[in-house]
Each structure stands twice: as structure tokens, then as C-alpha cells.
Amino acid sequence: MVSSTLNSRRPSLAEHLMNGLFLTIVSWVGGVVQAVLQFEPETWPVVHGESDGLLDGLLRQELLVLPYLVVFGLGLGLPSFVILRLMGLRTASALGRGGSLFRSFLAYLVLALIAFGPLSFAAPELEPFRPLHENRFAGVRAAWPLCGPALLFGLVALWRASQALSDWSSAWSRPARGILAVAAGLALGLVVGVPLWMAREPDVQFATSPNLILILVDGLDRSLLAQEGANPTPGLDGFIEESVEFERLVVASTGALESTASIMTGLYPSTHGIRCARPGLEAMRRFAESRPTLAGVLGGEGYDCVL
Image (cartoon, rainbow, N blue to C red; front, side):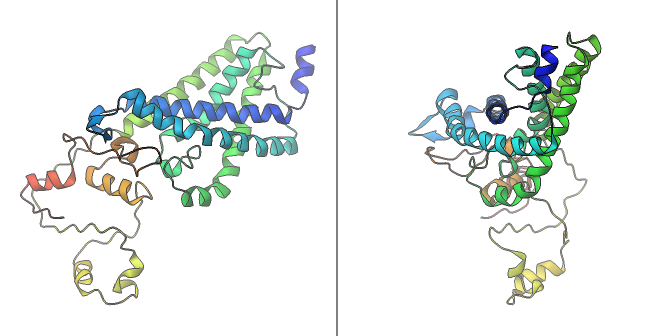
């Protein structure tokens, strides 16, 4: 009777702020784990002639982001409190009231993994929990008004599902434990599988060596071409007339440095690790000498590559 009464009360604002903070910390820990798994000493910034160690370089970089994530998590807790109050959602808090601490912690951990785990491996510009990580504000500011409410309502749905499982049996019946175990397994599978899938090496073979000209220009927008109504660009227009035009193209990153590195390697930014310089870091990451690049592969096939 007491458990039922506690489960039916509305959570307080402080509890929702704690929930948002909890989800934020889980996301940050996931980012640290990902960085540890992908750590390559030979690609880390070289400072004063010596490579930063794992703790001195990698964790120092992640700690720079933590204060921003804490503020962001507290900010997420406030709108969730308002929306859940408007929806009349009744649930137990993350602090263990209305159920054991272990049950509440397990439920929130499953929700955090399902909702935010895969997102921590996305491109930095698309990571909701790292708006200041790569100094990319425009994309995050434009995306959150659309993605934020949808993500929040998705959390509400998952929260309702977890509470239904929690209320299924006060003793956690075997079916309830089985469903949670399957959900946790799927979530962990996504967290582990997504970066492994993104890190796979491209394997493209050609029977012949076609004649091609690839021009990579930084900062050349479509609106600057004569084909799009701008000033005459006869040289480029000549190439365009004889080339293949892609009308729909999705870049790996909104940053020039990151997307250029993806073009040169065929890898996602989360895999090749090339980033713009961040405050507090003396240098940028760079490719390992053993990393295959587009110029290296084409040069090995007899193509001329110039800068």
C-alpha cells in the first residue's frame, strides 16, 4: 500500500533535475568509453615533441566538456518536468522512492542507453549532449527546436514503458526481468555495434582504372558557380558539363576539416578522429601514417595528386 501511494505521487522538480543530470552523466561516461576504445597513441596531438598519454590527453579532453554537460542536463530536466506535469505522468523517481534504489537505477539506466547511447557515437555536430564539444553552435541551435521535443516525448514513452514494467510485480517477476534484460541487451548491442559498423574499412575494387578528375575545394558553394546564376566560371563549368552531378549529397560533418578528412579516408568523423582545435588543446589530431587515404590509393594506381 505504501509503495502504491509513493508510485502514484507526482515527482518534484528537484527529482526531474536529478533525472536530467543522471542521463547527462551516463551520456558523458559513454563518450569516455568510446574514446578509450578508439584511442590510438600515434594519432594523438604531438605536444612539445611528445605524445600525450591516455589520461593526460584523452581524459583531459573529456573533462573539458563535463561542466557544459552538467548545465545542459539540468536544462533538460526543467522542460521534462513541465511536459510530464502537463501530461499528468505519475512515476517513481530516480532516487528510488516508490521502489528500491536498484530498480529505479536499472530502469533509468536502460532508458538512458536506449535513448542516448547510440547518439553519443554520432557526428559531433549532431550530438545533443555535446553542443560545445566541437565549437559548432549553428547546427545544434537549428536542430534542437525540432528534435528536442520529439526526443523528449520519446523519453516519456520509454519512461511509461519502464514504469509499466516496474509496476508489473513488486517482486520483479521473471517475465519483467526478462524483458528488461532483453531491452538492456539490445541497447548495449547498439552502443557497441554502431561504432564497430561505422569503423569498418571501405573495400572498393575496380576492374579498370577510369579517367577521372577530382577537385576538392574548401568554401566553394553552389551559389558561386555560373551554373547556379553567379559570375562566369568557365573552367569549372566545363568540368560540370562533362561530369556526374549529384543532386542529393549528405556530408559526414558540417565542419570543413572533419568532412574533408572523411572524403580523404572514407571514414566517419567518429572513426578517423580529425577535429578542429579545441580550447585547452595545443594541437589537433592527425592521421596515423598507416591510415589509407584517397590520395595515397589513387597515387598508387598511377594517378597524379597535387595540392
